[in-house]
Length: 158
Image 1 (tube, helix red, strand yellow):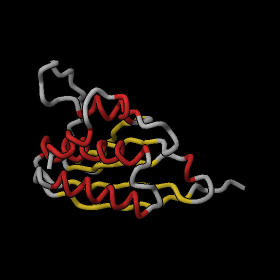
Image 2 (image 1 turned 30 degrees about the horizontal axis):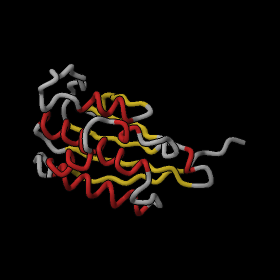
Image 3 (image 1 turned 90 degrees about the vertical axis):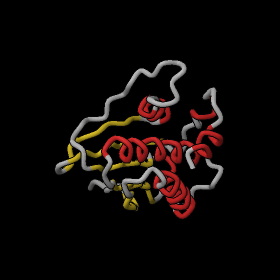
Image 4 (image 1 turned 135 degrees about the vertical axis):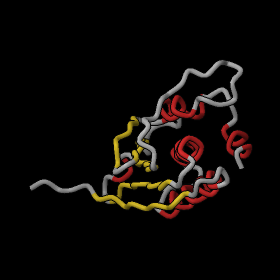
């Protein structure tokens, strides 16, 4: 008999307004804490940064509302299964990672998502798309080795 892995799925609507990115980060952080992750757990800052990047992409590039969904593992082996982040938007245009110039202040979002997560991808969803990524909760935080201050970066987006 195969046992199904249990998950807790939570979601919130995101309006087509750049101010929503800060709200989405705060919401994600509160869901992490509510699902038993310590606020200073390695996954916390990484998840918040990934949420920020994916929601920003949806809001800026589609100009339409989106849905942010977090899928948390529950049960005995939850600490070893990935947390999933999904952002669904109304655009059918695939996400396209860009090669940003060194002096550019944007264009690195999907590169960061790729670097910070175990895996990521996208698929068509209705008339739009769903961009997703997974973070291993027991993995060391890759953001610790980045050459920029993630707290300053997130604060600048408020």
